[in-house]
Image (cartoon, rainbow, N blue to C red; front, side, top):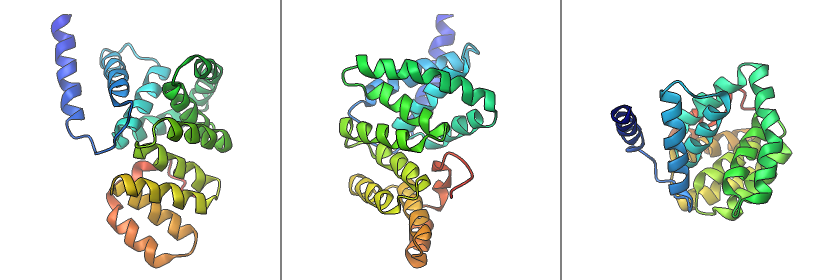
Length: 208
């Protein structure tokens, strides 16, 4: 059993050896969460909530393709969304107890997003950025939510702040999508071109 766990840890470390340059004050905490959830998933002992929390950890660590795949799988069936919605009161309670409440705030932000409660999701991403201002993924995912709310000026500000922290292809793609929505086609083409490999940052195929 111990040998199996060591092997799983080695696999985990190989996956995370290619992390992007996202910088989080809570990187160690997210890495620990991802490690534990990853082992449960690999052992076949995971539940839907375990996979969801793994995806949130991936998102904070910059493992966007892995996070997006799980998020999309969760959204494929209504029953899975309902299970996640049932977790929201638990996460809200944890938010009141944690200090600082970065983990619960993230679980809530993404849960509200998947539930299409974009206003509450944006509110939680605001809190996440206050707590973890150097993590580009808080800005990028908040921009996704603001894009959904058609708050294109706010999304632009979020993405420009993200680019100040790290010139990242995911951010460029989102900025291009945002420029497209505001009718600035030339800037849209430029930024989408710089981030064309990063389209999967959006949590679903509907980018409207």
